[in-house]
Image (cartoon, rainbow, N blue to C red; front, side):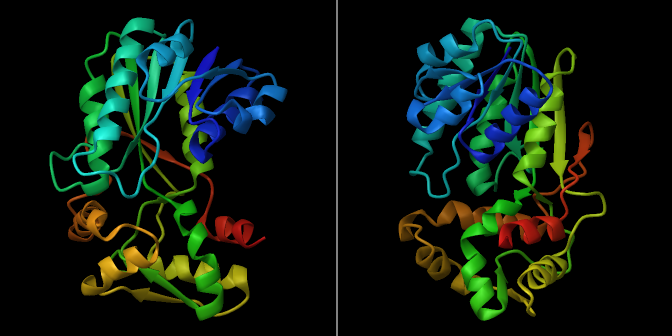
Length: 289
């Protein structure tokens, strides 16, 4: 039996889907069981717990062959990351108590860096906190989610422009579909190892630049779509227009600057490489449909 956090989301849901396809029993950690009825109908055991409640998480982790653990995504966290720190502490305490066979964590590209990470700081803290657990651990350092463009689809369709914070546009950028991260997570959970593993989880080998990304969306939409570089002075106003509080844009901007400078990157020594099969062309076609 495998326990999955985030089962009602994209990555956790994909982990659970792949485990069920493999004939495995799945237990899902849910904050609201009503949102997970479809999983219960498929035979998934549901355990209700807040993600920052060690006692509830320990109950969900106990008896599991493996646990998939993650911090809920938050693009505008409070200063000092208090929510993320509480969740990390609860996950660590729960794993320490329950001692499942292994734990696989959703981490991020760049999580090995000591500073300049912005939003990725939370996964750096997660890795630091859980690395000394008395169980085997694995970290999925995932690239940028293709799903992040879901909210921009109407803008792209209307204007014929796909705007990017990242630069230069011709650089191969780490893009991966969440279902492929889930595929990696399910595979690693079913494998045996001792100690620590780190996987860099990316899209198809060879990578994709941002001109190719815009072209893929253009083909899916049946119109020309141009890649546009957002100038740095405009970043904050664009983020605010997207719904981010003006006083909480700093971490996102710091992260983007570190991508653009090359500080955050894939290709680190001592890491395994996982390339998901979903191309940006396939993803764009499915998203448009």
